[in-house]
Image (cartoon, rainbow, N blue to C red; front, side, top):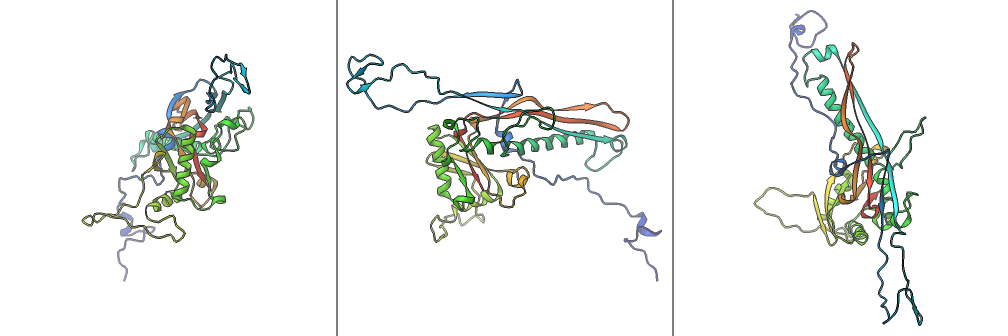
Length: 341
């Protein structure tokens, strides 16, 4: 005997009159955080190539000066170095800007109907801005070198943090201003990252800056979990579990590490956006990358601030684009470090 049912919606029957139950909730299924872009100081750029100068102090001298000696005078076996150009060691660093853009369009019919979300031109514009910020974040975290527009196939491109923090380059950064090898930890050659290795990186940065500045470690998921284990596992070969005291009246044990205080600086540990992480962009599966950066010594220079432009509606519906043009300024490459794999 036939009966009424809810599953047959293609033939005449009771199911064709059932109402939809579509909740008025829209969830964005993608991470949106941009810690490097958000924490960078913002400055105005006035050209497609943004530059800054760096300088260094000469090494300390413990030699005294003989009584009565004039500047540059040789007395016995001691020679006064005389007058010295104090600016001969200056260098000029720079980075090209990069243009970012996300276009959007909504048909006239879609903009007129009611929908969950909703899905109108204002929402399309807002989503494009959010996507644009992730594009910028991924580029700032990248390992790519800068590029100059050639009018054919190559656009302007900014140099990412991964290339700035490099003991062997870039070529335009003189050796005296490059990141020391001791501030870079390569897991592929040095093995698993450890608490001792983290302290070595912090100490190396301190030896370059001479101050215990507050650092920020932007860590991918694998590296973040490794650092969380610092509080539970000893650095010994036997990997003994550490004893941790906690309040027995509270049913809560905190195993994450958000602030690491060392002898040479305090490190705030924040999550790297997994969608913008270098490993994700490169198609890797070991998410152990991290940048140990000093917010005082890097910034974003904007030639065209992030904004939105509406284009004429030619009959199909409202449309427009969001864009920005900016570059990354790393004012002191020696003030940063990185963990790579």
